[in-house]
Amino acid sequence: MSKLVRRLIVLYVDRDNDVGERLGVPTPIIGRNNVLKVATEYILRYPDDSDANAMFGAIQLYDTLISTFGSENVEIAVVTGTSSEDVTADMKILNEVDRILQVFDADGFIVVSDGPSDEVVVPLIQSRRPVVSVRRIVVKQTRGFEEFAVLARYYIGKLFSEPRYRRYALGVPGALLLIYGVFYSVWPYIPSIVRTMIIASITILLGVSFMIYGFNFHENILRFLRMYEATFFISALSIFFVIIYSLSTYYMLHQTIPLWGGPLNVFDLMGLVIGAIFTVNAIEVYIKFRVRPFGRIAADVLLTIFLLLVASDLAGYMLGKVGTYALLTDLAIYTVVGLITLITLGILRNKYGKAKGGGKPGSKGVGIR
Image (cartoon, rainbow, N blue to C red; front, side, top):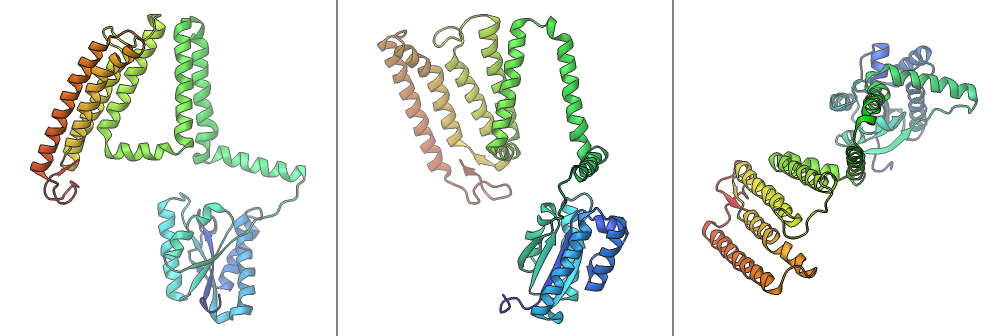
C-alpha cells in the first residue's frame, strides 16, 4: 500500500452532525490537536455518546499510522453532515472533504465511523480519493441487567421523543388501534358474507403487499408508474372491477362464475380488461414519447379478439359444451382477423419506417413501437 498510497487522511464521518450541533464548532476539523480538543470537550459533555469514542479511535489510528508513513504524510480530520441525514447532509460532507483536500492533498482516505449510517457516504468520498480502509468503532458494554436497563430507557426515550421515530412508535400503532376499535364496534351488525369479503380482501391485500416488497417488485412498479401513469391507473381500476365482479358473482349471487356462455364470462371480462389497458397504454406512449405504437395496437387486437372470440369456445370445447363446427368457425374468423392485423402492421412499418431518435421526447421524427 505504501507504494501506491503515500499520503493518507484519517477521516471521521459524523453524518447526523451531533458534534457540530451539540458543541457549536465549525467543521471540518483538521489536525490532531483540534480533533483531540473537540473529542475531549464532547466526551466531557456526553460521556455516553459513541461519537466521542469514535473520534478517540480515529486519533489512535492516526498515531499508529504516523509511525509507518511519517507525520508529514498523515493527517486527521472530522467532517459532519446535517441532522436530516439526507442528500443535504451528503453534499455538506462532500464539500467539507474538498476543503480538507485543499489543505492536505492526500492519495487516499481511511474512513472511521461509529455505525453503518455514517458509512453510506463512502462512495461519495471515493469520488474524490480512494478509500483504502473503513474502520468502525464499536463501543463495548458490560452485559449486566443495570446497563441493559439504562440503554433500554435511553433508546425508548429517543423512540418517543424524536419525530422521525415517533410516527412509527405511536402513529402506526394508534392507527391500527383506531381501525380495530371501529371494526369491533360495528362487526356484529355486518352480514356474514360481507365479513368474509372484508377478511379475504385484507388478507389478499397484505399478502400481495408483502410479496411485492419482499421480492423487490415495488421498484419495477414505481418505475412503470413514473413512465405510464395513465396505464397504471387503468390497470389498477380494471383489476379492482375484476375482483368486485368475481366476489359479487360468487358471494352475493351465490352462483359460480360462468366459464362459457352467458352475458359475461371470465374470458370476455379478461378480454375487455386487457383491451382497455393496451389501448390506454398505446395512447399514452404516443402522447408522451411521440411514438406510433403500431406493435402495441396489433398485440391489443390479437389478444383481445382471442379472449373475446376463441378462448371461451375453446374452454367449452375441452369441457364438451361447444361443438367442433362452432370452434372451427371462431378459429377461422380469428385467423382472418389476425392476418389482416399483421399485414396492416407490416404495411405501416414499411411506410413510416423507424424515425431517428427512438421516439424519445425532444427527438426529431416519430418512432414506431
